[in-house]
Length: 265
Image (cartoon, rainbow, N blue to C red):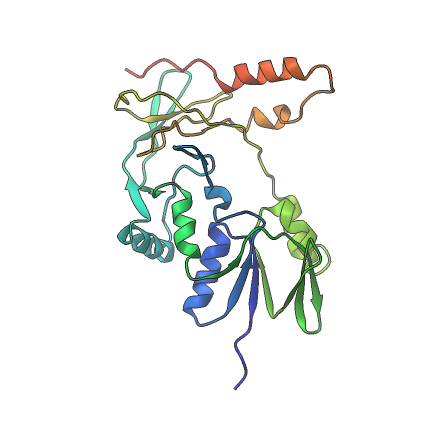
C-alpha cells in the first residue's frame, strides 16, 4: 500500500496552520516551518511585563462555513470569544457610519487562536527555510544554516508575497507573477500602555488621516494598536539621509498621534 503524500508548509500563521490542520484531519502528514519563535503571523501578540499588545489583526470575521466551524471549536475550548464592540467610521463631514458584522478575538491575546491551531501539529520554530528546490523526488528544502530539511511531495507557501517570491520564481513562474503583482501596504503601529482608567462606552473609531484605527484591546490592561492609514505610511516608512532623522522622528511622532475627531452627536 503506497504511503500518504507528505507536505511541507512554510509559514505558521493562520493560513499555514489551518492548512496543516486540514491535512491532519484528512490523515495526511504535514510538517510546518516558521522563522518566528512561536505562532502568530498577522495575529502576533507582544508581551512587555504584564502588558499584552495585539499589534497585528485586532479581530477576525468568520464568514466561511468551514472556518466558522473551526472558530466555534476555538470558542468552546476557551481560545476565542465573540467581540461585541461596535466599529464605526467617522467621516470629515460628521457622519458616523456603522460597520456591521460578527467579530471574534483570541484569548488571552490574538495569538491564542494560532497557538490552539498549532497544538498537536509538527511545527519547527525559529528556522528560516532558504531554499525549496523542485527535484524528481519532490520538493527539497534547506534551512538558512544549511540544515537539510528533507524532501516532500507537496509544498505550501503560506507567507506574504515578498517572502514567497524566492520559493516560486524558478519552480512556479505563474504563481510568482501573481505574488509579484500583490501590493503590500506598510503600517506603523503605536502600542500604548496607559494607566488604569474607566473606559467610556462607545465605538472603536476609524477615520481618514494618518491614524486609521484606534481600539482598546478587549479584556487586557493595554491600549490596542493604532494602525496608521495606508494612504500615509508608504511615503513615511523610509528615514531620510543621516543628519535629518531627528526631524523625521519628530514629524512621524506628530503624524502618528493626531487630534481625535469631534465626538459624534
